[in-house]
Image 1 (spheres, rainbow, N blue to C red):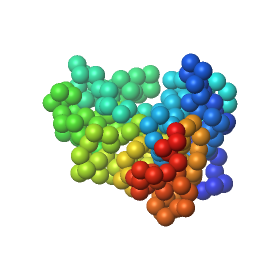
Image 2 (cartoon, rainbow, N blue to C red; image 1 turned 120 degrees about the vertical axis):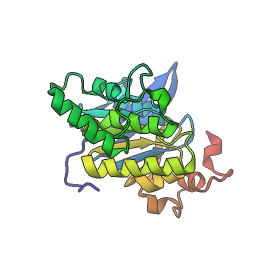
Image 3 (spheres, rainbow, N blue to C red; image 1 turned 30 degrees about the vertical axis):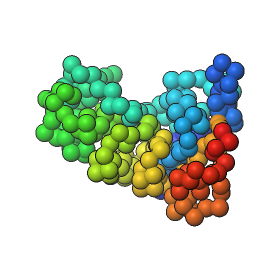
Image 4 (cartoon, one colour; image 1 turned 45 degrees about the vertical axis):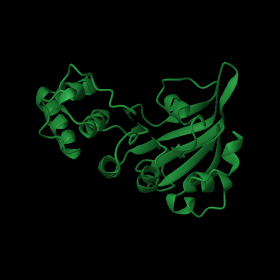
Amino acid sequence: MAQAAETPAIKAVDIHKSFDGRPILRGVSFEVYPGETLAIIGPSGCGKSTILKILCGLLEPDSGEVIKETHDIGLVFQGSALLNSYTVRENLQLALRGRKLSKADEEEQIRKTLALVGLADHLDHYPSELSGGQQKRTSFARAVVYNPRIILYDEPTTGLDPVMSTIIEDYMIELERELHAASIVVTHQYSTWTRTADRIIMMHAGRIVWTGDPSEAVDSDNAYIYQFAHAKREGPMLDA
């Protein structure tokens, strides 16, 4: 985990966002440091995906700002979002376009990254020839093939069985260690935020209602995180 004295890799400052007059984000602020993974959790509709889109530049906030140490950002989509007519190699080559690498260096980087996610033997496979888990891992490889300083994960284990979820979580932990990137993962899945995150923020109705580390979440007396962590029907989230 990063040292507090470091400069944040990415920082959200008092972010507000509304759609059609309906507030979605109401003054969200946080920072993430190099080598740290922050999980953003909370019920559906609380603003998690909106803040992720603002962080990567797909949306503009109504007010507030995002301060980035770098524009080298890798995004792992909820679906694999691979181009079906391209091989695994070609999907990764697209991510390296404009990086001014020699053909040999490009090939070495692709092979090295695929080896990191256990797909070194699948260079010339098409997405249709891969399992769902292999497609997800290819998506990981494409997002990090140019060694980004910031990695954003959008529900990376959604729809996967428990074994494959564990494998994907293991890769997330390995990528943090290998790249020393600042990582942000938006997730509902208990195992993902307890296993991969160094720190958690919980959102509800567009605001941050709790922050802490995974070891504090289950036993916290905060009503929001207690209800979420224990999957209780009773609690303040029913008032959303």
